[in-house]
Length: 143
Ligand code: CA2
Image (tube, rainbow, N blue to C red; front, side, top):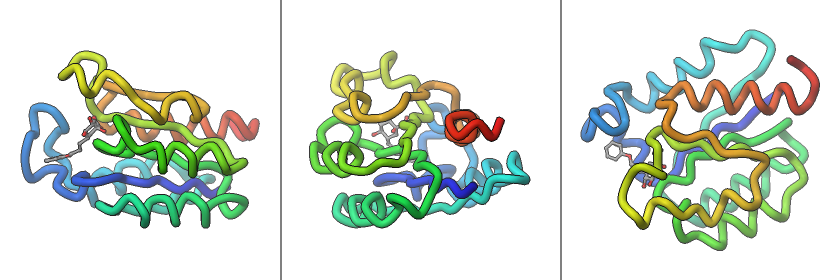
């Protein structure tokens, strides 16, 4: 089983600012944290600040991975292009937010992505990524 984790815009800044909202781990530490949970699942990681690169990656992942875990960053709230890319693929996609977007500013309450993913995990910090990978393994009856 192989799962692709996609980190959207500004998540390369993790650990460098806003530790109260997003924790103090850097993106590399987050990736190592996720990887450390799984022996039987190969996890690949991709980060981009660019919408088109994220869309390219989603399209390329279809059929190549057992599923995608995506934190679309602020694209969550307005990117119909990422939503369309997810809707067009066949593998399961799980949306993750480190923070509880429902408890933050009004503009973060809406996700245009949520309707086209298998499920969404928000507010569980970086552990949410682990839950999302587990959800994909469970979807394939691996756990
Ligand atoms: O809670 C999340 O994971 C978000 O997807 C993170 C996005 C935000 O726009 C969403 O509303 C919720 C922002 C990621 C920016 O991450 C930073 C981390 C450290 C310093 C600066 C930005």
